[in-house]
Length: 196
Image (cartoon, rainbow, N blue to C red; front, side):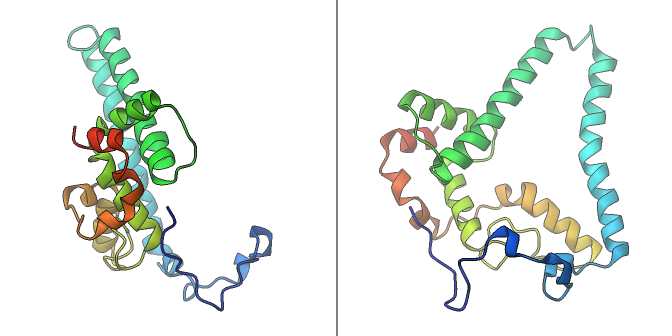
C-alpha cells in the first residue's frame, strides 16, 4: 500500500544522504533544533531520569525481593515476555504489518500479531493505521503521536514526550484511519488477530 505522496513538485528527489549538508542548518530551518541550550540540557536530564529510573527500580526490586517474592522462574518469564512482545511490536506490527518489509508464513504472521497484542499497544489494525498515518503526517497536524505539537516550554515538551510515548495509546484517534489499512482488512487472519 502506498501512502499519499506529500512531495511538492520543487523537491529534488535525486538527493542522496551524501548530498545533505547539515552544518548550515539553523534553528529556523529545523524547528526540532529551535530549543535553547538551557532547555535542551534540562530535557536531556529529564530524559536520562525517565529512562534510568524504571531500570534502576527493576534492578532494586529484583535484588530486594530475590528469594522471597521473586526468583529465577519469574525472571525467566519476564525475559521471555519482554522478548516476545518486543518482537511482536518491532518486527510484527512495525516491519511486517505497517511496512510489508518481508513475507512470512501464516503461522509466523499470527504469532507476531499475538505477540504484538500482548504488548498492550492496541489491536494490530489500529496500531498499523496510526503508524501509517504518522508516516504521512510526521510531526505535523494529523500525526497521531508527534511530540512536537504541544509547544516549546518545558511543560509542553514533557506533555509532548508523554503523548508520543504513552498518551496516544490512551486517547484513540482512529477516525478516518481505516483508509490506511485497506490491504490488511482483506486478510482474514489479521482481522481475526486484531479482534483478540
